[in-house]
Length: 474
Ligand SMILES: Nc1nc2c(ncn2[C@@H]2O[C@H](COP(=O)(O)OP(=O)(O)O)[C@@H](O)[C@H]2O)c(=O)[nH]1
Ligand SMILES: [Mg+2]
Image 1 (cartoon, rainbow, N blue to C red):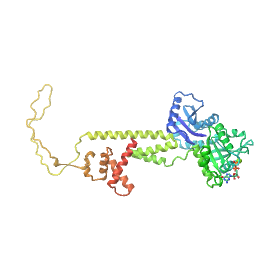
Image 2 (image 1 turned 180 degrees about the vertical axis):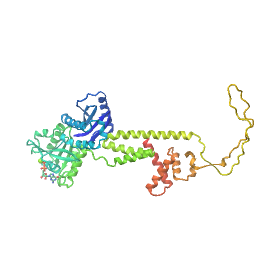
Image 3 (image 1 turned 45 degrees about the vertical axis):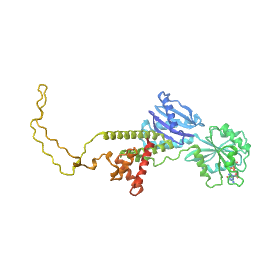
Image 4 (image 1 turned 90 degrees about the vertical axis):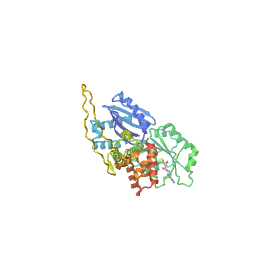
C-alpha cells in the first residue's frame, strides 16, 4: 500500500501526505541522507526503487523537483511508478512554479483530495485465508461496501472495503478445498493476510498448512490470526491455542454486535493507518509562538517539545524540521539572556535613585582659585589647583535605595515581602536561576491554577518542578 508521499525542492520538503506510518524520525533522517546523496548527483526523469528497512522507496527527479513515495515491500514498481507519474502530472499542472504550493491554498487542498483518492488505484489487497467453514465469508460480508465484487475466475471474489478512510480490496476464496493449489495465487501481492480458524475445530494439519502458506507465498504480507467462534461453549481458549502453535491470535466471535468496529480497528493498527492529525495542533503552535514573543522561553520550549512529539507520532516531518529549528533558536535566546545576566551581575552599578532619610548638609565648595590649563607641548605645566576643597562623605545610614533598583542578588532570605522573591531565593538556593519577572509569572500561574494563595509548601514544590524541568530540557 502507499504509505507516504514527499515532494522535495532544494532539499526542503515542500509538501507531504501520509496514508500510513512508515519510518520514525531517526529512520527518516537516514532516508533523507541517502536521498540527498542522490539529489547532489541526480539522474533526472528516471524512476528509482529500493528497499529500505521494512519498506520501499520509489523516487524520481523531474524539473528539479524530487518526488518520493514510501510503500510496502509487497508493492510492485510498475503499479507504484504509474501512480507516481499521475501524482507528478497533477502537481505540475496545479503548481507550475513548485514553491507556489505554499501559497495556493485552494489548489493545495484539491491536490490533497486527489492524493486521498489515488491510494485506491494501487488496489491494496487484504486476503482472507483459513479452513473452509471458519467464518471468512461472514467477515467479507460484514466489511464489504455497497459495490459489485470483482470475480476472479471461479476461485476468488474481491470486495471494496473501507478501513479508516482508505479503500482496500478484500479477497475471499470461493472453493471448498483447503489444499487447493490456487491458494498461492490467491495470496499473491496481499498487503495483509487475515488467517481465520474455528476455535472449536482446528485440525493441526490444516492450520499448519495455512500458516506455512503465509510463510512461503506471503512473506512480505502482514499477518493477523483470528481464533473465531469464541462464543461457542466448545471453543478452546485463545491462550491455549497460542501456546500450542506459538503464534499470537485475536479471539473473536462474529456474533459479537461490536465485531465490525473491532475488526476495522485491528486491521487499521496492523497496517499502521494514520489517525487524524490532532486538530488542536495549530492552536498549540500559536500558544508556543506567543510564549516566545512574551519571552517566556522555558514555557515555549515545553510547548514546542510537545508539538515535536505529536509530529513524530504522526510522522508529520514537514512540520518537524521547522519546530526543531524553532527550539534551537529559543535555546540560543536563553543562552544569550543568561550571558547578559552574568555580565550584569559583575557590573557595579550606581543606584539609579537615591533617597535621603534625613537632611544632609553639604558645604558649598570654596571658589577655585586657579583651574587646570590645557597643556600644550611647548608649555610646561603650571601649578594646578592651589587649594583642594574639603571632601564630603555620606555615611551608609544616610542613603536609602529605593526597591526598584535592588538587584536580584541582594534579596535576603529573611526579608521576603513577595511570593516571587521567596521563589526566586528558593530556586537560587538550589543553584537554579529564574529571573524575578519569570518567578512572578510562575507564581501567578500557580495561583490561577490552584485558585488560592500560595504557601511555602507550594513554593518548595514549584521550585522542585522548575528544577526538574530544567534538567530535562538541558
Ligand atoms: N457461532 C458462530 N458461528 C459462526 C461464527 N462465524 C461464522 N459462523 C458460522 O460458520 C459458518 C461458516 O461461515 P463462513 O463465513 O461461510 O465460513 P467460510 O467457509 O470460512 O467462508 C456459517 O454458518 C457462519 O454463520 C462465529 O463467530 N460464531
Ligand atoms: Mg466462504
